[in-house]
Image (tube, rainbow, N blue to C red; front, top):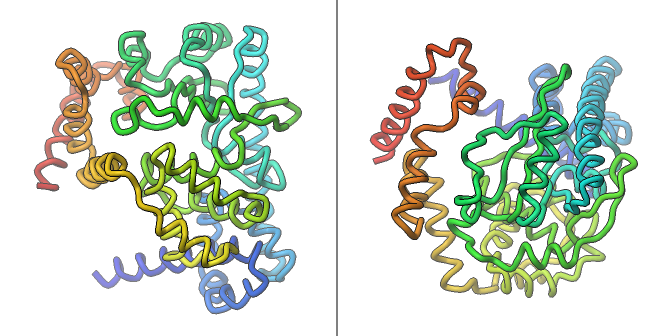
Amino acid sequence: MGTQQVNRASIDTSFRFCLYCLRAQWDAQGLTHIEPLLPFAQENWEWQLRMFDSHGIAAAVDVVNTRLKLFNAQATDDLRQVVGQHRQRNIYRLLLFRMAYDALAQAGVSFIVLKGAALLATQYAGIAFRQFGDIDILIEHRDLTVVMETLTQIGFIPEQEHLYDSQTAHRDIRVNMIKRAEGGEFHLEVHWDLFDRHFYPNTPYAEWCRSTMVPAQLAGMDILVLNPIAQFLHLCGHRFIHHPDSGLLKLRDIAEMIAFQSTCMDWDEVIRRAQEFELVIPLQRAFERLEQDDWGVPLPEEMVARILAVSPSRRERLRMARNDARWAGGAGKRFIIDLISLSTWRERVRFCWRGLFPASSYMTDRYQIRHRRLLPLYYLYRWGKGVRTLVKRA
């Protein structure tokens, strides 16, 4: 028990050190928060370096270190090696993305780049500053067939091909396309909506995003991205609807957008759009979490108070309550809540079949199955794990 407590404390301290290094980018008194934790980081340098790596923040920490002289020469060299790895990793993924970009442009498909890659183009200072495991794009649903055919022709394959047919696309919001190459897999997530339609059905938000998109540059490519208000609401919604338990990365995006773009952001319009598209609760949770974790974002207290005082609609409260219950119950409970949320028995049967019997290619990738003969055993394992989760949560 004592060892577990020490490990938990170490993780918390290391996380806090990461956070305060990021905060020092905009907080003139940042060193006062870092100094009490610096001995821990120095004594546990390999651990701390892994945290910088896993959270994708090595480049930002390197800038802070250059200014505040936090680490010795060897530690600085170690940190810059990680920055170099992050830079090369992003360059590799952007080279593969360039293949998709050129092919889709030739096919006449317009799309919006989302999340990490979009922020790399609009918010972060260099190619190593924002790590991304995949690249997300938003298309018109009517272009889905052309997009799938175009990407397949250049070597992409769908992660679960049978999940994304025309009969279920009105419930799904994305397909994950995979390109396997010598340097590793590259994932391109193709979205035709932005939030889970079980909980945000028929939202006009995506259409508004498409009608207000703005141009940007990403590694020499002319791309389209969300306008700043749409981007901010999407970051809040994505974090607190789809990933309520995620760590530093998604909060960092929100915090840095406030820190570096708040003076040119129309916060009255942010509030109005959040009410219009029923994203008030994710917006409020973002500010509550930033305050709780002590990010120190430079936004006037009266504006934060105004945001927190907005009353969400009854429909939004019900949706978020159901979404919260879905995530609190583990995978098994999420399956049941998603099942109940479907409107027809035909959809429910298809959903059950997809969940209980996902494609063999997905199972092989998900569970790293080396021998095809073992596949039936992994289906049993998947079902048993879901049942155990339900019993445990109950």
